[in-house]
Length: 266
Image 1 (cartoon, rainbow, N blue to C red):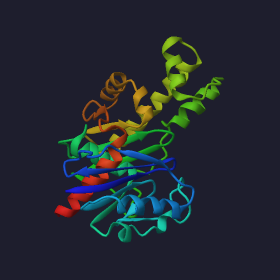
Image 2: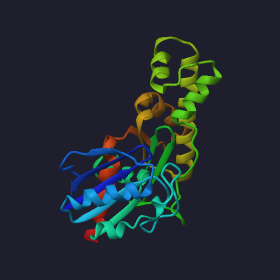
Image 3: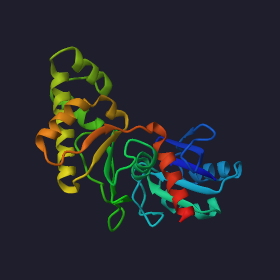
């Protein structure tokens, strides 16, 4: 079984052929995201026309409900929400939110495997959240479950650092500088990680989850030992494990494809 899988974001579109076990068969390829919805649709049609596949999957920015976008994602052009994926695919297909897709990859083949309750936070410029509850994706009444404004994004670190007079805006440069000296960068990083811990604590108080996996570029600068120690002190009876996600940049592609496999197998 082959699934043609796409991961659509504001800056790039990735695609790959993926088998039913989540293996990428051809090496993931990327294309800059066009500024026009018709051009995005042409990319889907062109790639679909050049490949043979049994299922079609799209991980996308935006709120998704019942295999459809609930509205235009903020980072994609007007009209994107009206693309007729069924006509493009002509085979069984799945459209899913990108955070949920990435989380599903972690749940099936990554750091959340063999759990029943888990959360994945994607820490990037902004923060995405996917929730597994009793082995199922928690979507809510309109598909927006987990769409919370968390204060532990890259933008958050930049804002905190600026308040301390740091002119550097690159988050990794701020982090690297925080390791070298006890100055403004270290104070900013400490507050940022405290914000992350507050976020984790709130999530666990609501969901009582087994694991919170962290993905995205900002997940690389988290002090996992410190965060795990702190959450065990704050919530000693039901502390979740805090761990880095393991599926990397291809998580959205893999997760969407595996959701399509599940749909096809019933």
